[in-house]
Length: 260
Image (cartoon, rainbow, N blue to C red; front, side, top):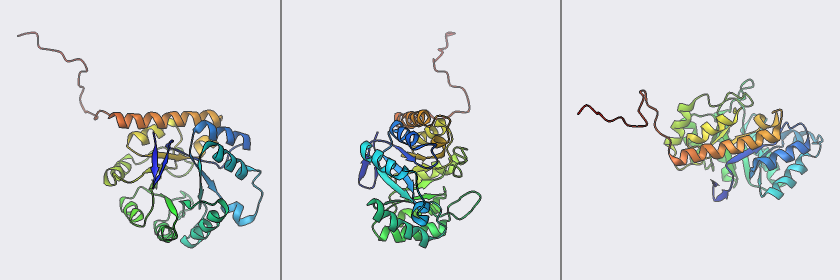
């Protein structure tokens, strides 16, 4: 059940965020339970203020190394392309990775991506040799432009960050999958339940990235396990071939006309 991002193949389709956990030990256990091989790491506050992180960064790095996982620093909190590029350069130097989850927020209430600043930053970071994974909306034209800019994947939202609403626009997500059959597509943000992750995978998406649904659960470790199972089940369902929905009933056991 491998996931390809550029030339890199990963054994898990679960990408896990590392913010907001109740304790460093809970974070460590949740990472292990998830089986995730990509861990996102928000560095804006740490790099920008020099504030203590209570050991979370070191725990993430040690757990990632033990699990064979990659760190995916993100530019969460950035509002302009320039700010995002500067943070990406700092993250590359600090964490020694050219992978970056690109976030440029344009709306304060929904934390919706700014498509113009996002595309500008994606072009610049791709030219600088980054493997760019942009957090974007489900807009088809924006997706096309980001892929043309050199992004290694598209990561459209299912719903606003942390909302737990699931897939608000399955039609748009299906359109992305149909329009870009060779691209790596990962649903990022807005999922609140394992069933919603399974739904994303059943649509043919390549992976799921989430944070709040695990970090804020009553039992984050158990929730990480549940999401991992749902992601695998959804992918297997997609690959097995789901039956097409029908308006009318179709008998599973044919009934032959015995009047003849």
